[in-house]
Amino acid sequence: MQTDNASKAPVPKHLAIVMDGNGRWARSRHLPRTEGHRRGVNSARAVIEACAQRGVEVLTLFAFSSENWRRPESEVSALMELFITALRREIGTLAAKGIRMRFIGAREAFTVRLQAAMTEAEVRTRDNHVMTLVVAVNYGGRWDITQAAEHMKLEEVAQESHETALASGLATAGLPDPDLFIRTGGERRLSNFLLWQLAYTELYFTDVLWPDFDVAELDQAFVDYGRRQRRFGRTGEQVESRV
Ligand code: IPE
Ligand code: IPE
Ligand code: MG
Image (cartoon, helix red, strand yellow):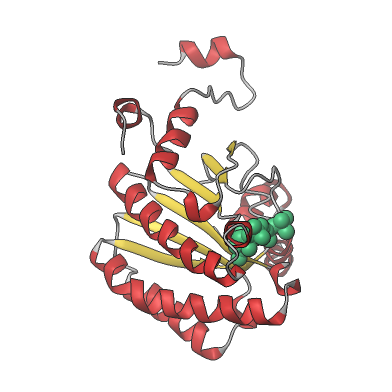
């Protein structure tokens, strides 16, 4: 339920979420971990819809990290199956809602079938403007910076524009940096998510496990975000005097 406070809260332009806690959610119910992932898709659907309604311009969801290959093979393959079924099932609705899809991460590690489904979703939604949904799969912040640096080396960029050039080689090129980062599931860490892009992002951690994270929880995070003063190195007085 959306509270009055929530409806007045400023909304981040770019929200990035680490959707964590699926396994523990399932374990506490004596269910297989994969059931937690399946339920996590429902949370993602609700959050995507609410973000689009509230005017979020970019939503980035961390779905699979470059380190998640270390999980048991059975869990990894169940996750891959879930990605492809969820993508095929949801793409029509997402496209109809005006959502543009973009995937970030080293996608060549995936099956041809999954890579094709990702490209198809991007092509199908490329003219949509309501919200950009970025899904990070086989993504790692260090991978991102490394590949941007390699790209920059090839381009032989002039000394003074290194920072801009590096940013333009990142997987998120063309998107604003996240304003708000949410991590569910109780851990207070980045787990190699958008390392470069999170430099000035407001961080929000909640113990709520991802399958239990609903629109009310999202609104609570937005209210909290609305209370932050973003200073970017300036003093509080300077920020207040800038109307
Ligand atoms: C996050 O939930 C989903 C992925 C990493 C794919 P987890 O599976 O990490 O859940 P916990 O942390 O074990 O509870
Ligand atoms: C981060 O969660 C990755 C995703 C949510 C996709 P993890 O559960 O993999 O993170 P760690 O291993 O606990 O740091
Ligand atoms: Mg986890």
